Image (cartoon, rainbow, N blue to C red; front, side, top):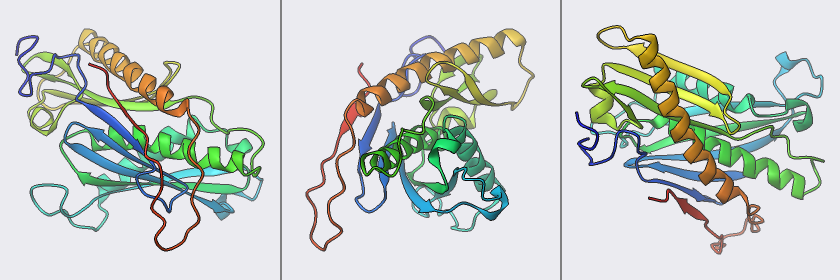
Length: 261
């Protein structure tokens, strides 16, 4: 694989076309459609008063996530039943978003992030983290606007991307065909300030070297920095107030932001 001969014509260090559509649905407290190439994930955030009993009622909030691939999101129908892979992914999303949330400042409430894959072409978990952060941000921003929170309970941005080694070459943001044929496959989650939250990596065939690991992490960091910049541009404007929940209400404003090529 040469520097510019990936199957979709991208450079090895280039993201797929990325778009975040804010307030994609109108009922949830936060709602974002995250699009990475042909992968599309609907991320919604729902705020619930009270927290899980095991937290002990110490006025500390909680952020958790649920993830699913809809039956028509892949070429073969996906079952709605949650298997081990689904549970592993939703734990990753929850851990990632809690890492940038001030749970004390959130207070005795829970935010549930639902990530539903509408169309899967690789990178669904990383798209879920990116869109889930934006949905979480809008949900808690609306709590601040309603004077239910004194401060925004977020410490940093959060974004994720896949990287891998395909035909001996390190590449960024793998679609399904590359992911299925990768020699090494990584998912990397980072904060906006560059801190690592989680690194998931596997050698699918031959072991990889420390130098290759460093190369993959550097590649992921550059891609995540680009995504975080998109997040910041979108979040520079506060979320629109929610319209009254009445039949026929449809005048919700959509905000889109895309990767600049």
